[in-house]
Image 1 (tube, rainbow, N blue to C red):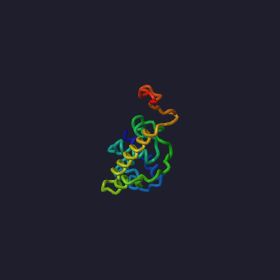
Image 2: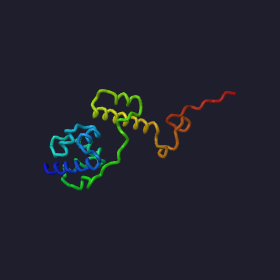
Image 3: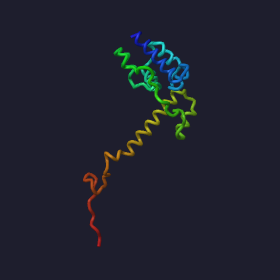
Image 4: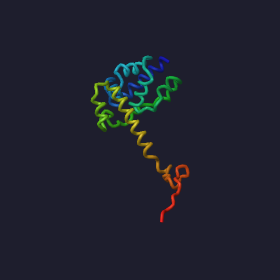
Length: 159
């Protein structure tokens, strides 16, 4: 397991550098973890948690769970060959509304801010998905007159 972690660490370091992060600190800041967490991952330390590995995968554009899979199986092909760096996303620390601006301007650590922003944005996306159903799957909207479960009794017209 120790050699797997060292091999993994070398891959992470190479991918980080290829992504344009000359230091572990700049990469750590970009993904919202501590510099020591990235440094520990790069040297193959066993003190790196799964959450840090998930953040590293995301920051490098690697498939989610590839690090865990590699550490469990030892199959090197579970890790991206060469460098598979994702194209940069929009700056996660750029506010999209007043609530996000309040989070960003708070005194929380960067990692905590990113967690809050990601959770808030995920909730907004879910709300949009629920409130705007896919029209291909729901071409007809049920109305009280054509849905027997919600139909109202017909009233007689007065003369």
